[in-house]
Image (cartoon, rainbow, N blue to C red):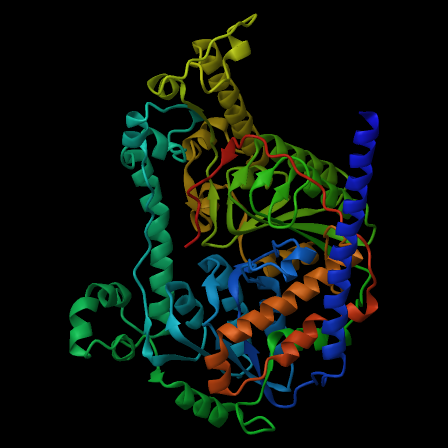
Length: 620
């Protein structure tokens, strides 16, 4: 028998070796093919009187979330595209002072969203760019609500004559499962602290509660007012024009023969409805033709950044450290796109031990998560501040619940006016299906030395002792959250309780309530940190987990893959405008030639119960 097991053991080892060999062989074949096919391609050059062409893809993010793998290149599952907000802003700021750049052309066809907070940060850079007397033009075949908001930072807005500007207003809807769970005899034990902590309502109610309706209406209406106010100001429209546009849409459609584009043009939302050929001719007229005369003279954002990165290496020994914390807060080590208590604490420690870093900025874009992981992060931030390193927090689209918890140690907390923050509250949810099991003939029985020993089983009724234990735990975490917030903001704990209880606030209101210190973008936070230290000469150093050589190669290859896919998806636009995006692909593999193979090992993370989270904190 032992001999048989030994044979199977050897066979397993052989299969493992063969599998690893095949995976690595595929990896290096793909790498060699890509490098060989592109090594001889013409390199992008510094532009001469060209427009900067910016075509953001997918979701605007503060940190790329995907994890590259060799299987990504051969699987049919495409990674959703993402665009780094800092890349867009950096390209605009660089182009502002570059005499070779004559203007900016925004192609918003591929933009899926990201929230008006991030778009306002990009918009601030566009406003600064326009102050240099260079034009900004935005176009899309079809403007979604978020695409159109960003377009309003341009001097001119063009839509396809068969396209649309589709503005509907903001809404927040959820499914409520109470009736269904009653029919299934499924019960949910709910533990929460905070009247407005309404993430659990879909499991306990048939409709939105009065408290939930009240506090969600407040922040949603405030953000909608900011949305419409920006458009009406940018387009020189009277107050209420956007709401009138939505209200009159059904009847006005008929007057314009069912053409949404002409309706949008007559309402003043766009400057002109054009065909793609007409748009190309207009851009050539404004920015000049390229060498082939097929399109307007331009350089794409990625190539422009790559060229400027190569030309401008690190200059100053003074660093402002930047750590990006994006996603749900979870215990242990997590990959980019999620916040791990241990992995983020390691980055904070790494920044603290870097002697060149003079101040640390923590960028938070998170609706919260694990209370335990949040406290691990907070303690590391406290240690950093006690070590004498100034600490600033920049809130992105969302920094609520656990996202607010980890912001409290900062010397200064900054948010944008549109940031969703607060939600100081705690909840827990335990499903119980014991009655459901009985209904279909499944019984559970056994023995234990105490009621608590089997009290957490979903197939047994939860004892009152366990319910009391869990509610006490939730109350304790909530009181801890209140005390942390009150101490950090130097407020009376009862005053914090009044504005807590799970309530969600916009950044503008949070400043009035004393939950944050200042309003401003990430760039303004970095400038404030440098200004407080009287640093005239400094660089921003982003603190990230070092990628292995193989991870770097896979990320570059995946970016090439995504860009190639995007070019196929936008083939009509590219051919109509005469644009050549090969330079963008080249810029993404510019670092590959210096890299060599190394095995990829990614750490596992643990997912504990989420107790401090804002489930409805969405940034429209």
